[in-house]
Image 1 (spheres, helix red, strand yellow):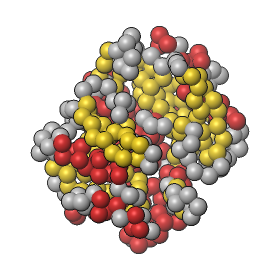
Image 2 (tube, helix red, strand yellow):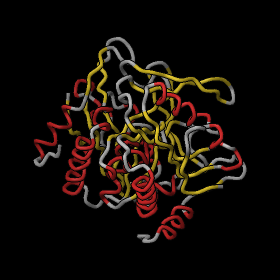
Image 3 (cartoon, chains in turn red, purple):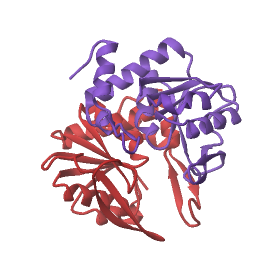
Length: 182
Length: 177
């Protein structure tokens, strides 16, 4: 089922997000994007909407950086549409070679996001992508990682934004574009 | 830089793989970073699937590097993509299969309703080494009564005999070391 207008596409995407209460822990309402991936039309709609936004707002983008692991589901697709490369931002210890990392706080401790040293060139115009913006902990660490590598961070794109969790505040001065807000 | 023939595409992909002799790990990051090389990978996968498994209905990809290639291939073929993840990452009811790691055990998991019985599925990952994770994923699909058509990977480490471990499932790899 192809969707033609922006409104129809957003509708299709929204229909393919499933809510799971109390996952991964009690009190959290988890928004699952798996149904989007399972439906080719819904996934095409997501990438169409991202592509349209990027061509209008960040047409000078040179690279897409995606967060491990659900950012990997959307990032390469968007990168291919735009004719640019894709680089991986992963949990510490997963990438070979020399890396740069930035720590961030988890609910029960600390973790680190990491990128290969030569993934991004200084001054390169990069867009960050992930499936969901919640508190913004991981995404803000990823923004910092790109800044640490002297990249020019144009902004972030996510499928879903949880407005109540004020992630957009946490990632400032970086901005975020989301398709669906809750 | 676009590559036109199968040979040219394989060449482009190979140029973008960094092999480390020390850690025996391979690095597919350069492929993702170069749009032409990534297009070549998906072209080659698509060509193979259209020739050999044209009846495919779903692509299942392994967390996390299978996620880099799977959705692209799925979109090319006009089919859906489902995630096979480490245990505990997927919400809702799941099915899982254990496998042995170097220092213990782990489990791969899929959502209960990801695959319908009899659905024709192709498995995708970046690399086939010993075949531990991939064979667990094959078993997971069989457990869900899917019809596993085969596996596709970018790189196959022949010395590690992964293709033996995943039998009776078959594997198609673009590059062999």
